[in-house]
Image (cartoon, rainbow, N blue to C red; front, side):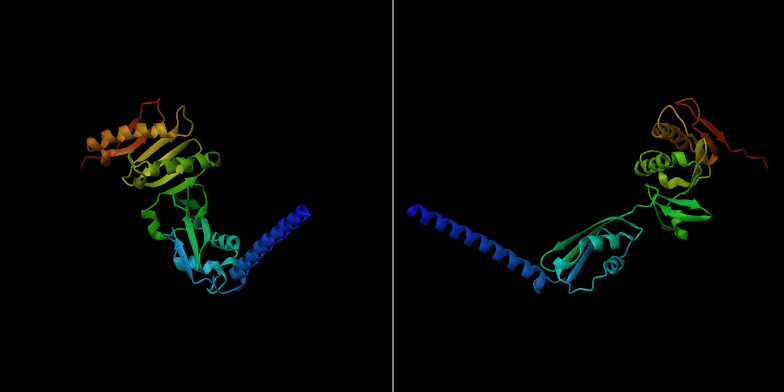
Length: 248
């Protein structure tokens, strides 16, 4: 008899605990989704530099006053990603009344010349948007005539941009052409640098050799006299062509 009573009490205890948990769960859902305790009052945007905060908030299509836990975060994220300047975004709820948006913007690498127009492009080859006149002062114009090496070429340009300790620094290029058999760097100083497309070593290795050549040239104040530097010579060697000046 006692055993039966004990089992009955255990069942009642179990039912009570389950009922309590279900009640708490139902109450929580009701508070989160059907009351005004967690209502959107503020949208915080972080990480943006080029894209205005106002533009990002407009893309969410939120007006304020929406229940925080009914906001479809995935849809909001996809709407924000329609802006070509934004590479990635995190959208998160911050209780009790805030939506936080953290964006990662695409970093322009160069101005891609295509069909007579210039477009900002990143290191992955993604076109960000049409360029503005002032962008020519910030980024070199690139022409890609060899699609087989395009990905490697853009990665190489990104490497140059990031490694400012090597000469010439990225800001010194006005134009870079990926040709069929060579890369041509046109400097703002007016001289050209040739790299072979196929090399026993990497392009980074050649660039480090170029750094040594240019360090010597700048030390001797010869940079205004240079017309051409060719790195398509035996490894460790370079050809330097000086400008011709006519007398009188």
